[in-house]
Amino acid sequence: MSCKTYQLICPLDANQPCTWEIGCCATDLVGLDEVTIQPNQLIQVCLDTSGHYGQLSGSGYINLITTEGYSEGPVDTSCSTQCGDQNSSPIPTPPTPPTPPTPPSPPTPGPTPSSVTCLQGENTVAFGVESGVNVYQFNGAYAQPYATNVGSYVLKDVPAQHPIAIQNFNLTNVITYTGTNAVGPKVGLDGNTYTYYWGDVTITVVGDYGTVSYECYYHGYMGGQNNLVYNSNVCSVPSAPTPTPTPPTPPTPSTVPPIPSPITTNYTLSYSAGVQGWPSFYSYNPDFMVGMNNYLYSFKGGNLYRHNTNETRNNYYGEQFNSQVTTVFNQNPLENKLFKSVNLESDSAWTATMETNLQDRGFIDYTWFEKKEGAYFSYIRKTGTTPALAGEYAYRSAQGVAKATSWSESNNVLTLNFSVSPVIDISMVNIGDYIYFSEGAYTTISFSGQVTNVEINLQSGINRLFVNTNFTQNVLISETTPFILALKNTEAEDVGMLGHQMTITIENFNTTATELFAVESEVMKSFP
Image (cartoon, rainbow, N blue to C red; front, side, top):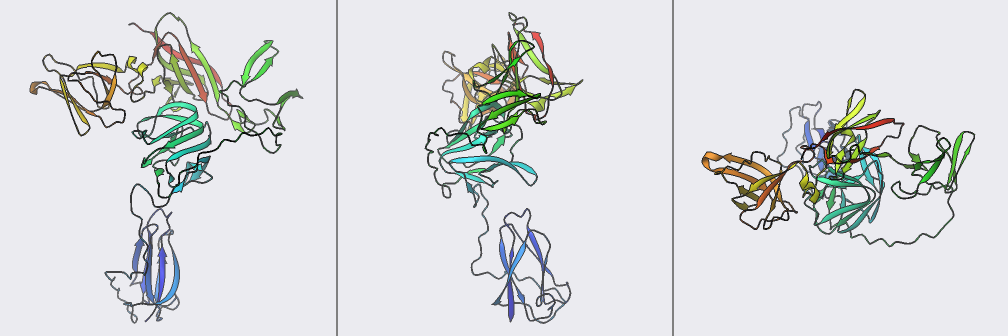
């Protein structure tokens, strides 16, 4: 019997399984069967060509239900088939479909995909849209996933509008990262605190980290969730870049050269006739400036620019900057105060970072501000680290509990027992708090883990904490009765910044005009 073999293919990028209707030896659609295959799968079907349904290529009928799949063929071949003469009754599906000579292997689910895009030693950074979502693009395209071997990988020129962090919690022994400019720490979408960088960001890999995510400080994953994998089989070790000094060359008119960073000491000063002085500092650095016909002109790299000709703010010579203002609250400097909130008399929200003479790491994301009576208001919070820095033990989120009467540890679970006579009140400790301890002379504090359960039943002699110790920074307890401390989530449990004065820096990322009239803070006297 003469047959035609059709290959049914479901593409790799299909967002759902592909389904076809297949009829054999039918004058109507009564005998149709459905074939459904998964993305990146290929099967072959054999249709009789003896000719009862000639208007549809022999006696076979293929109707694509979903739009992602497609067919290739037909290819003439010999095969056995249950197609015979015309039969309007449904044809039973054989228990085993025909096996092609070389069937493709379906992808095996697992943490390491079969197809990866290897990062290079240096990688350009751009941004695009995939399926309606803004994504990081490395080396001109977005890939799922990107992969590395061991070595150093540089993400070049990450803009300040999209600072990036690698979610390497508990993996710092095999993968680390740093950058030329830090926007500051923040709790990532996985619940752990990371430092976000812009400029050149260097990723250093020394071992198998499995699969990690990367995310933007302001906009979330941007396609980076579980999108960086370790693959030493496909990716080669990048060669170390050899720095070559750039000889002095005349400026190229067609290319705008990079300008100094706004955090360096290279500034442009402007003179004000009204104050008869130089009151303003600008972060751009032209080669020459001149005022003419009520316009400001400047030269940079052999190019001529006219300023204030459009509505885009803070863009100089093709480089976009952010607006930044630093001020100080220092009324009554001899009194210790608690700075509780920030109020911005502005037409938009700003990101704020704060520090006092006693505490640092105060932070307010611009999304945390609420508009109240025409101004933007938010309580001051702090970004803590795990383990805590030395200065964080003085925060009001840190609480001394007591000496443990005994302890035991099994399978990364630490059990801390406390006295029931006299009663040690551990009810102030909550699930999610971080546990620290001190031993010996009680001069050092070490990180132990995170509370997973609090169990109190004094009648039964139970008064204990259960602590997860599965952290790379974990330190093992060595003495029988360590002194226990508990630290709350500094962002959720915070009560402000303590100090005599507070320095605050606010930053705005808008490219349009933004007005700022005043920066205010709610302050109360602190009584020791």
